[in-house]
Image (spheres, rainbow, N blue to C red):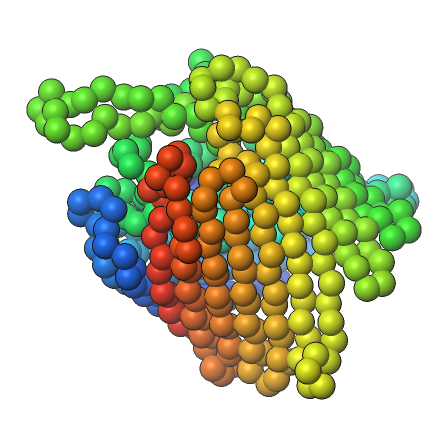
Length: 409
């Protein structure tokens, strides 16, 4: 995060707190541990890791129609130095009001934006950068500097975003699990001469018509998904593999997401077309990708008060074997069993299959409140089969068991 943005955030926070009519502090402290039953794929990797994550949110309302939110995050990992980092997830001033029969909202600062309806991945969610070191499957977003204007009315909701700074993607280090076979250079390259300071633009219009909720979006600027360039061997350590250098292109993207709610089914789709990016062969290729999915909830299963929500999705990239997307032709099926008991117990099971490579993975998760403030999360990810010819083999071969204790305040 740029130093200037952090300073501005602190100035606004101090001003808001000094005149705050409402002041609220909340957050989570998570203690995490993972164990990997498979032998390491690369030297320096460990069989187990431990760490913690602290994320707090300060909300201050100075006057009617104006508020400030700041959410810093700090993560520590015992094995991977790149996974130990700090980030400013949110630090923005929010102003809102009425404009005739419409309402408006303006956010200035660092914020997170989510677009999409799918469960496994979201093709249209392009504003914020992914934090790949956070979790092998769940990929939260880094904070993004922006000016975001939202106008809403009976005709729908329109968002316009100006993004003045690009956040580079995070990657596991040499000792981290779920990493690629080659080290990733921390100094990326950019197609734009302005590098990370290229001003990107994004917009979205959303509405609900009867049973259909939909959105159309557009983006023009620096890609959030890097292409990788092969680096050169070090003269001092020629035995070390040549690093991969992330290269961020200038792209445009048009997207659509929709959800049709019927009784008892939910149908979901996301699609996007992108231009200006290169494929796995290094050739520039415009392409389209799509997600189709459905969801259904069964109430009172097995004659109990438990509910079972089942869903399935198909992810497809039109570039086929030339795709740089890890989910170029994948299917995903999962179920969430909510026991509806006092601790809020939920059991999640999911199966992911790559139809192009021989990759299959089973994910299991248990979430349960231990008290009003403590939450337990147990998870297991088992790689049932993997293909060494898969370009993402090194990052997807590892199975693991994890435990997470979260204290909320």
